[in-house]
Length: 452
Image (cartoon, rainbow, N blue to C red; front, side, top):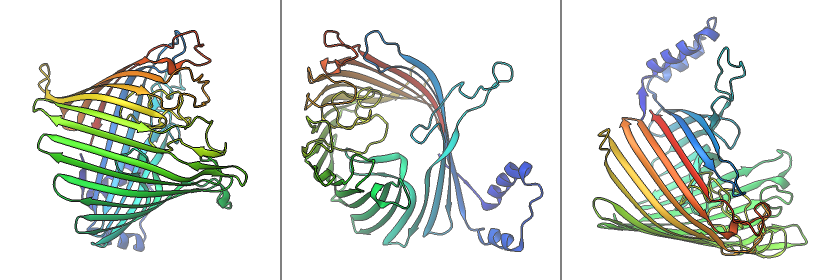
């Protein structure tokens, strides 16, 4: 939900909000002229307030405890459209650090029990971009959310990237070229950078069929800290979506080549790939779907070891895609990326899911329900990881997820997410011991979110 304000109304809000710190400030003649000339600007405010509580058991060590806590998140965005051609947008988000936009309850209570506390954290900029649209073509520059295809290889919609995107449309064909600055360790040293170059095209063939293809080239400096120095990795993605009556299908294929690392002595050639397929049928009262995903893995420790590197390298946000626990709340053992959100790296997934939209019999409000069961399996059980994986088995286990979402009022949603992972023997590590079965994992989270 968004709220559009006139320039005069917005000015009133800003003046009142800053009055305490700017009582002695006076507009110069140039300032007054600038304000007057901006009178035709369309200013839009948007934002959200989210409150969550969770119980999170994401450690397989025998009899390990679950964590329990509440957190908050605040977002505030301002969009300014001064003409049909020029738009600017800035979005702020509460943040604990660069990769965590949640603020845990109670962490700011430095005053103790007597005076109460405050929300402890800062504000990060998740979006700050300028979009110039000349009609048949345009340029968007700044920090912006980006994703490719069906988000199998690349998805940074959560925090965004610093990028320059040029785009154009020719009928139903849309073309774009993107320069992404992933990493800039030292402004005076290009050997530690990581840059991304993207060419993409999408085509709407009919109301039922659309498809796209994209090519991403990642170039890392010789001493880069991202993945490995000397990276020269290409990823080609092909995706399609088809809808016909009550049926819908999705397909996405990702193929990698080039080198993951090259230090002048050892060169690791990229050989990774991934495939994701999904089919859904609308039965009227409910939708039922099947999903299959496969991502290649490597039996070596990762980049820099020389030879071929079969890991499917991806760049995904810290969010749940197909499952809630495995690959989101808990890092899958045997993945070659060393992160919790490793996507389809060294993983096969087989899922059946169902969803429905109805009315809550208690509140009378709209209610959405989703449930899924997913079997997960490693494709290379000998992959070496930092968490002590022993390579005894390739079964990650079976995860059961359920999500319920109530629309309580316009802009106000209450959501409950529950998940349970019956862990397989792939979780046996030096922590659990080869003779001990790893604990099952579970997750329960509820949230109240107001969006305006």
